[in-house]
Length: 258
Image (cartoon, rainbow, N blue to C red):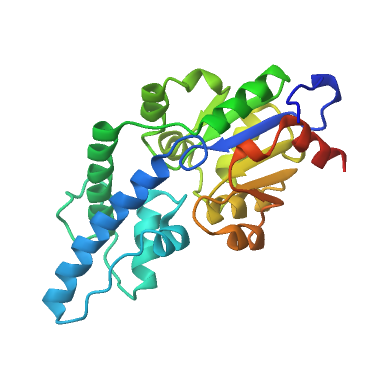
C-alpha cells in the first residue's frame, strides 16, 4: 500500500514514537543490562540469606516490571515482585550501595558500557515510516524514559527526524511522571501543538500503551517485540503489529477515518 497522502486530507496530525524497541534496538541492551544487574544482586542476596537463587527473566520480568519505566521505578517494581524491600537511597549512591538508587546506577553503568561497545542499531522499517509521515506533512516526536536518548539519537544520526524530544532528562526538569502516567506523551503533543485526539502513540511496552490510553490519544499502536501481543491489546493498544513494515500512513489515516 502506498505511503503517499495529501496532508490536508489526513485525519491525524502527529505521531509520537517511543525510542527503545520502536526506533532503536536498545530495548535489547536494556534487557541484557537489567539481567546482568539483577542476577548478580539476587545471587549475592541468596548466598547471604541462604535462599534459593531465582534468576531475572530477561523477557517475562523485563516486560512486566521494568520495560518503559524510569530506571529507579523499574528497580522498585521488580524488587516488589520478589518481596524485596530496600531503602530508596539517593541518586548520588554508588553502584555498590544496596539501595534502589544504587542498583539503578549500577544498571546504568552496565548499559553505558554495552551502548559504547555495540552502538545503537535502528529499525529500518520505523525510519522508513517516519520519512513517509514527514513527507505527508505529519509532525513526529520521540519520547524515552532513558537519560541517554539524545546521545543515542546522535550516535545513530537520526536526531533531525523528530520535531521534539522528551526523555529522562527533560522529564526530570519538567517534573513529569513516568509511564504508565501519560505525562510524557501529553506534554509531547502539547509541544507539537497538536490535540491528543489527533495524535498517534507508537509503543512496544505495556506501560507505554497504558500511558497512551490514559492520555486519550486518537490511536495507540503497539509493536510486539517480545511475545506480548495479548498484554499490549489488554492494556490499551488499538492495533498491534510485529513490525512497522506492516502499516502505512494510509493505514493509519484509514483508522482515523473509521
